[in-house]
Length: 452
Picture 1 (cartoon, rainbow, N blue to C red):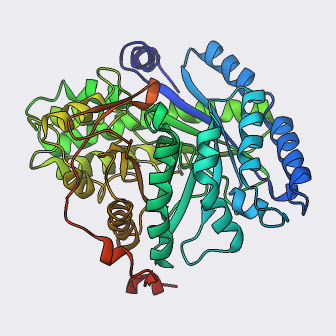
Picture 2 (picture 1 turned 120 degrees about the vertical axis):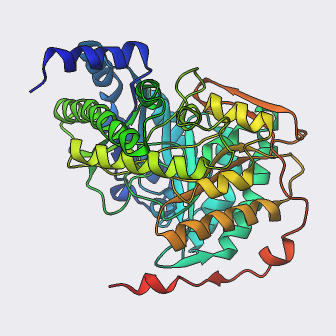
């Protein structure tokens, strides 16, 4: 039972420490929408999304007002469109993207995810058509997000898909160059993608999910940062225990919102993703948490150890607060969306190589990183391959979301505004990886994938 101290503490977290529900995401299965006629299929998709999600935004706003808990985003995720479109006798897959965009705007949500393909072991004709259409889809829509899963611990890494995605990212950047290459901010390449992730750009509604579900993403870097200020000089076991207790409280808030949204929308409650998701706001930064542990600047020696401890403590606290923890759950390190990361990258302490090392111990991977516009497709593919290898070997989700905006060079800044923030352009290694990427084929799954 909550006491007065607990209630006042939660109010303080919301009003002063940036605690919010980052997203209420409704997942919707579109498998019933398949049709050989693409116009009929798109009509089915639009009707089903609008029927299921028509009350998502007003109900979320009701909960926000009644409980006083900010809900930053309302989102929709759908079945990977490559699966839905496979039955169509048409190559115009971008029509599905326009349909998703129209449905999202009708429902009033912030983003819709699921313009996706799962190609970790190989590509079907539908997968190839969808991937080829991604630059057009993301340049001609506003709210659609896309993802491609190129590897898994069980299947290995599809290097043909990795090579292709480097080219797709470059083409997407070119097609949205008038908007700082924003199409790339809505495109992520995964290894070990999960089916119930509520966060964009990687959210999709997996085939193992129910007809519809409500998934919640919480956020709380500001809360963790605030409690660590009172632990100056304390040993790490005390720090870890404090973070666990804080993560428990943050997750309970998410659980409350999830249950209410589920009840009011008559939709099964899926999961709470307890990831620490930063924003560009001061005091809402994962980097500042790491620095509060004693690092002069995020990215210096000791950063990976600090992040490992943070990520583990967040997970341990969160799983005690909810029996339905899922998604990614941990700590995100998107450079453009974290003011501390931006500062460390701008100062040169935080590099892509260091970020790659950090992804071994935290949620997702190289996220929202601006690279020079003339970075080659092969270099981008090699970055994806490195990150996919970390995910494959460590049996965890990893991803790459890079922004090679045309005309931008090291020292420039890409401005995207809102939660997407701004990203300093970071250097990449000039040495070529082209011969490596051009081999193609598949990197086999590791030996521990044979566990059964």
